[in-house]
Amino acid sequence: MVTARRPCPPAPGPLEDYATQFDDLFSSLTQRHGFRECLAGLLAPRDRNKTLTALAGAEPVTGTQHPAVQRLQFFLSESTWDPARVNARRLELLRADEATAPHPGGALVIDDSGDRRDSTATAHVGRQWLGRYGKTDSAVVTVTTLWADERLSCPLHAVPYTPAHHFPQGERDPAFRTKWKIAAQLAGRARAAGFPFRAAVADGAYGDLDDFRCELHAADVPFVMAVKRRRGVWAYGDQARTPVDAAHEPAWRGPQEAGDWTAVTRTFRDGHTATWWVADATLGFWGPDGLTRLAVATTDPATLPDKSTWYLATDLPRPGSPRMAESPYPPAGLAEIVRIYGIRNWIEQGYQQVKDELGWADFQVRSDVAILPQPSAGGDPQSPDPGQRRVHLLLESGNHRSGT
Image (cartoon, rainbow, N blue to C red):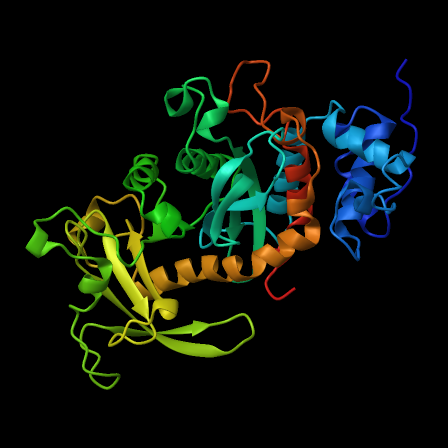
């Protein structure tokens, strides 16, 4: 005879209706209660960083042995629930809700998030570049994907990057994966999860990597990615050129005689608008009708200000291009390329605050069981099956709309 489940203490307010939809993924009352406590702690306002004691509402030092803190520690680090199934259910609910359902016009934003870690005992820690701090430091870096349009963003997947020194053979070890390799696999996972997108977008840290662009192209994942302004191409010394050099070639005689430049109106989250100018450029094998296009978007084609100029590589064909017939992707005009990359830009500006509010950088677990994807029963080393618990619960709380 099947025993009826004991009722779980409800989560605050409307959060209970949401949490109930995950109950069948947890095998015990303790797990269901821990799930509710964790979500409530992540979403509730706190006057300090969201460590385990803060999530449980206990004192930072004297409260470490508080029963609520110990329950939460066990739930995140030791309990035998499957975070991959929890994340899959979250994505399923997002797809089913008209307010958050993805559509093919959105963008898949690829990024990584680095947070400082002093302990050498923490899994994945190593000296890595941290863009947030502008320096190299001891840190854990997580590669992330999220689906976004001009209205909302939905975090999809997150996988920690493990530096080469953690592997017996270093970078030659079969289990070692670069950040771009992880990112390419996550792009495929997003599509498999039922999240269509117009293109994958990323900043210059990924866009400058030829291997990454080739990997996406081979997987039929279209891209619009920034490249660094001083990125060069193979050429004889007197023929060496950069995106900046290429951007000066399209004709420009001012706003009244724009020449090869097209005016694009960008609308920002606060409602104000600005006129940008965009043109196709040629750099080596990159050109308007090449496999990869170079589009330059700027507020001033004459001076190309560093802070308001984008150099964008894309494999979306130009309307009217000979490549249209053979390309698997619909063509994209210059305004569409700017729109797609602009989605990533507001994510970059606003998402760090969201991650801070949810406590992304404040996890205090060290083991692989708590923060690392572990091999599944089938032996797949890339399966996220029993790990990523803190990360996935943060993703649970991270869905947000533009302007909120």
